[in-house]
Each structure stands twice: as C-alpha cells, then as structure tokens.
Figure 1 (cartoon, helix red, strand yellow):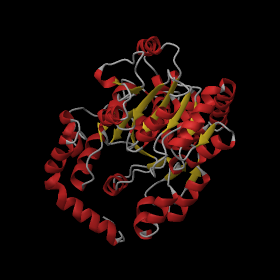
Figure 2: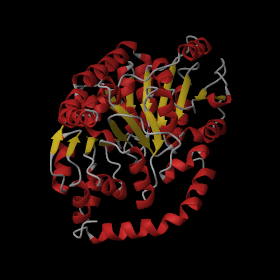
Figure 3: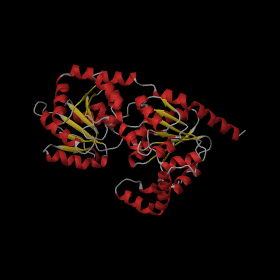
Figure 4: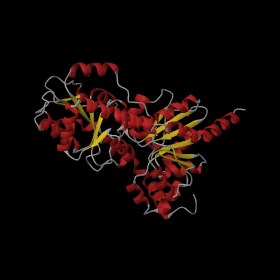
Length: 434
C-alpha cells in the first residue's frame, strides 16, 4: 500500500476491511429484495466454480445493462483476436443480459463486493492480463488491487457528468489517486475528457461513444410475429425504460390521445422489470384495460396499455412502435439511451433531463430527429402531431437514424488505442509458451 494514499482512501480501505464479516447479512438482504442471484452469491465474495481459461485474458467490467451492452461489439472483436474475455457486472439484470447476448465462450461473473479480501480472491483466481473498465464504475479496492498487481487498467467509453465532476472536485486528492491508476482513459466526448484530465487522469484520449456502434437490439422472430398479429393495424406508441412518475405521465397522455385515436395501443417498458405490476396498477387506476407481458399475456382488441416488463425485449418494442418516448428524462435521472430506437426507425420524444446522453440528445434535437417535451400535455400533443402526419414522422425517424450513423466510429478508435496493450498481452503469452 502506498504511503502517499490520501486519508479518504485509507479510511475507505479500513472500513471496507472491517465490514467484510457483515457481507453475508448484506447479501442476504439484497437477495430478499431481488438484487442478487441466489445461486451465484459466491461470486460476490470473489469465489467461482469456473476455472480460469488458458491463454491471454482481458477483464471487462461494467456496472449494469447499459455498460455491458455498449461493450458487446468490443468484446466480440477481442474474441476474433483469440483473446479470452471475462466480463463482470453488478446487477441481476446485467447478468440476464450477459446470458442472452454474450458469446458462448465469454465468461460472466458478478463483480465482487469492494472489500480487499474479496477483490484479492477474485484477481488471484482470474489473473487478467488487461482490465477494461466501462464508463465510470470506479470501485477503489477493485482499482487499487488491480494496479498493485501490475495489470494495465484502462477506462473505455469514459463518462463523467458535470454533477459527478463537481462532487469529485471536493475530494481532489482522492479522485486523482484513483484516476492516476489508469494507464489510459478513453473518453466519450471532449467534455468528458476535459473533466477526467482536470481531476488527474494522466493520459486522456477522446474516442467517441461506443453506444453509437452497438448494433440495434435483436428481437425474437416468433415473439415479434405474435405481437404483430395481436396488434393488427392499430396505431402503436411506446414508452421505453421508464422510471417512477413517467408511467403516470404516459397513461395521462394516452387518456388524452384516445379521444382522437380510439384504437391506440400504448406499450410501456419500465426500466426495472420488477415494477411491471405497479405500472399495470397505475393504468388500471386510470380505468384503462391493461395486459402484462410477464404474465404471458398478449394485447387483445380491447387492450389500451401493454406493460412489457420483461428483460431484453426492447428490440420488440422499437420494431412495433414508430413513436417512442425515452424514459429517465421527465424526472431528474439523466435520460436513457436513445440510440437503439433511432437505429430501428423510431421518431423519438424525451423529457428535459438528459444529462447522461447530453451530446447525442443535443445532436438529435438539432437535426429534428427527436423532440423535447416537459409534461404529459406536451407529450400527448407531440404524439398526436406525429400520429396524424406519417410523412413528418418518417422524416423525423430518418433524421434520427442519419444523426446516429454520422457519429459512429468509436469502436475502431477504441481498438486502435488498445492495440499496443493487446499486442503486448499476446506477445507475453507467446513468450510464456516458447
């Protein structure tokens, strides 16, 4: 341990070490709340029933679904180089996504709790040759133990909002001590890069947003056909990745719209699928006939609200609805990803709170590929205009698609920056077997 470690990090190390015996209670509580996978709790203690694969191994870590999804093309390109990949994440939903979409030979583990003992156990078992952290999930012990073992640590698709930047500025020595452990920081935008540099990251390169290079989300062909048959020729709109409060606004917008669009069907996909029943109750309270996908229900001719509370099926919604409201934006959350619906031909609506994706929302709005709304009334007005003018709706969707396509290229720039590290990793592996 470095003598120059800031006091805040020393305190964190001591407290996390002291808290280790409480891990069973902490994990049991999370398990009761549905936030852990019961059969895989050992992974949160750095334990694994899987053996480390032979050969070079790159460790890719992302906090949750969005980070893992953005890294999928990068992971696939690493595999084409013959490099083994270990992916870690921290949420049950990200584990489900990993099971659905990671290549069969890529290992997924839940990231260990950030205590020195659990992290050491994890790193000593897997012995990665390179660690790639996606976006901003900076756990101190995870970073310190990794760098202590001489493993190159690189931040990819680095994101740092203005709010997070201001918070970290209150602990300048602490954040600098963490960021200086990165051999390389690949930032999404120049603004992100400037913030990382000011906080102490030693080498920063703007590589672009990997999410712009992620393929459109897939959709099961049979499920898509079943939904299309159930919906028929009804007008369809969708609200994707919604948070508490936004479903109420969407239900109110539907109530206003059905006067002029009596056959309208609204699809609502809550950001957290476990909230599906609560969303159905909101719609039921508004006296709207509702069906719930997790109950294996399909919409019938009388259904007004269809709650799509399943994991990994946004690709279905985006292929069914020509108008999509993106959640996390009417409330001060920061907005969810608009890139996927843009790639699948949707006209996009969003609220004012889009700081998590400020650059792409700004570009979409400027190109008239998306529209900002402030409340249920404006949401209903915008949807009515787009439903009533198919030509304007198609032009909005095309503007969105073209905007996203024009900003792609982050994957190639990221791979170019990683090339020296990947080459060194493969040469070292060959030397061991020479």
